Amino acid sequence: MKRNTAISDFLLPLQDNQAQAYLTNTLQVADILEWILQQYGEGCKVFLTTFSISEEFLRRLYFIERDLKPLSFRLVLDLKATNKTLKLWPFIAQVIDEVYLADNHSKVLLVINPEDGRRVSVVMSQNLTRGNRYESAIVTTDFDVFATLALQFDDLITNHSVPFNDVFANRLRED
Image (cartoon, rainbow, N blue to C red; front, side, top):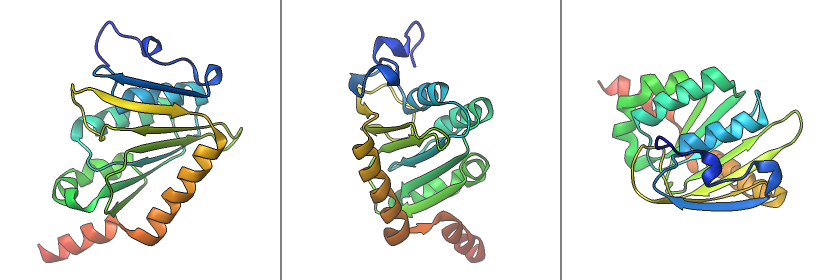
């Protein structure tokens, strides 16, 4: 997030608004994730899909995980970004529990607190990178939206992806 900007300039607390959106060059995906976890507390499960991930995002994720203590992270990346992902793998492995590769261009963030059932879905335009472009997102706590996306996320992992560990292990054997 840019200095002198508050997330409240763009979004209301989740309990106050079931659906909201933004279009700005100020917010980053990490800002949104941190904002959600601050409201939902420790022990949340986080699901992410993206085309690409950057070292800058992973650095933010490391601190978010350390400070806000989510229970788990599952991530789906695109197969075409594998070379970049291989270079970041040691860092990825420290902050993300499960990583999968698929033909994926979606950018979805799902967060659920399993203790109380609160959940939020974010469908966004930004990859898990840092940039100064205008990006947009829709943020909703609607149960049906979350349920639909969670089922499709599970299908993507189960039927259309490979665990990144398998790709990484094959690459190590080749080298």
